[in-house]
Length: 99
Image (cartoon, rainbow, N blue to C red):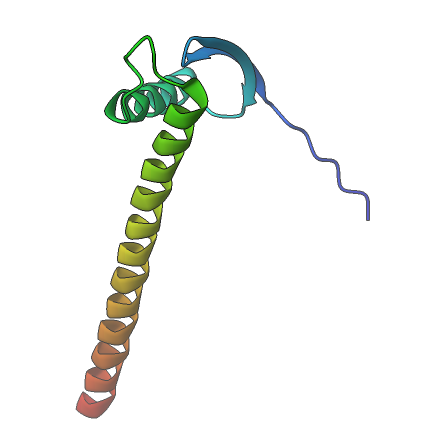
């Protein structure tokens, strides 16, 4: 069997912490802009607006804040999935009892 994989990555020029970067993404323009805006907002929250701020420290703080949010949301997702599984099993049991 021969499987051909095609990547449709598009190049984007973005600016994070005053650094111009060229990145590839298979996402659309709006999604990439949303991600860049989110990261820049997190950088501002971490103190990245001051001229005398250490860029690396701000990037690390922003990354830590983003990772914290991600882990919290991941835990919430797992809790919701667990609840849905439990409720689904309960509904199946109730349906089986009715039969």
